[in-house]
Length: 150
Length: 446
Image (cartoon, rainbow over all chains, first blue to last red; front, side, top):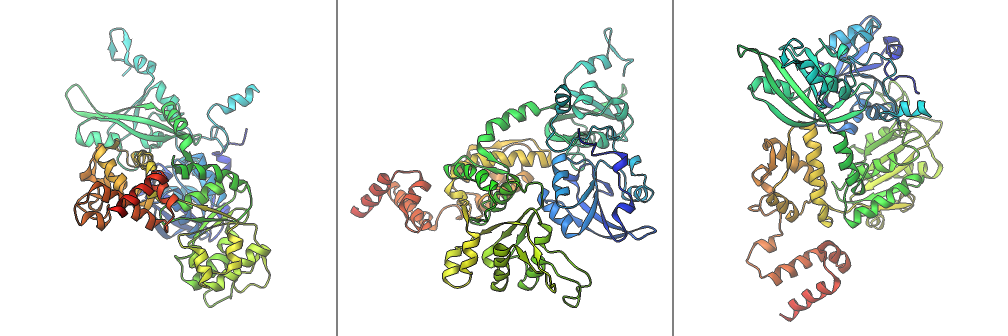
């Protein structure tokens, strides 16, 4: 069994991104979108050592998965923080060199404040508490049990 | 709710025993009830769901837009059977059908909403199995030309050979390139698409190969190019026919020696990248005209795949229409069941110069105007409708023709499209060579 994809131990802090590295928040209507797939825009923020500064935004409406990946690449995003995201989409983003922290909820200010204080875990959506439920590529529903039976 | 009773059985027990997921929210969208089936379908225990915002628990494709609960509360009317998907915390996607209704207290005051949902995974799996013969990755088709491609792509994907994709704009060249990447050994590495025609010549070189700090005035730090980003993976060079000759030489070096030099760089960089290129031009003709390097053409053209135009595979139009309707239903949360026979007839007669992209855009337009049920002709853009001259050639509209003349004209047009190749015209028109010869002879005699 792979380690859980969502776990408080693998949540990101500003140190993970480093100074000048770009963090994107996938937003919809003033807060993180419930789903990455339906996010209307990304807001780009950079940690400057003492706080976050907004570096602009980009519209995602109307773009498919690959169009969205292209936007993140063009905006040189290092870390994407978003709401719910499927395992396949996460794999594609990570294959493109983008770190992903999905299953986060809250307004942009709250999320950035939590990220700055290493308290992103407090904003995880219900059911995503990092108890090994999150699945990696190749596993299907029930595969955990099947492996255990073997 | 547990206190309410139907006879001797509490409502909670009743709701926990049904197979459909049920949850209720208050006016602030906080979950107030979450039955056992809802726990099973969403993968979230009721203990964690209760008191939380429904969007944080349900993660449906409607949560950020036309939420079923929100619209039923706003309009005081129930919503039935919207096809959407939800994401479970394990990252799996579950297709569901959602219904919602307002919740009122005994005085008729609105106190919240109730949503029921049904897991349609089994239904989708069954449909997918039925359709699997007609799909490859994101490509859809059951015509002979597409079936042949579906047979070739997995074999070509396994090799490291350069691939040249030919086809008109909108025929799905990028989808084919992605399929080649996703089915090949480089699937876990990046797929980078570059449109060679979208960037000015001066920018294209730095975009492809990157630059070093100091290479030019504004180059303050190193910038990796697309070849760097695609290391280990695949680079897709669309509109390769528009690549300037100076860059063609540099690309040839990547293909021959697997190395390139960033702008301003002195040390060559190794390029472990598979190259898939695409064009809607005739590259051989460009070679003859001296606008495209012959040696590069041979290097790119190790495997050549041609994506047929939509008018050459009209039998795929119903399948593609159903595919896009399902896609837009999921994206918009609408419940559009299909198109009328009249609309399908219009699609089958239309020439679709923009190919599959045009069909997709047409259906996206129809989704804006169609509230639900079947898409009718009035939901289509004007240029598709019969009053417009875009569907049929001018020669067929300008005067009344006999059936023989219509057939003759159709053959002439098909021959024109296929550079006089009779077998290709026969395949497009789905007639035998004898029929074609008979129609042509009959016209000559007349």
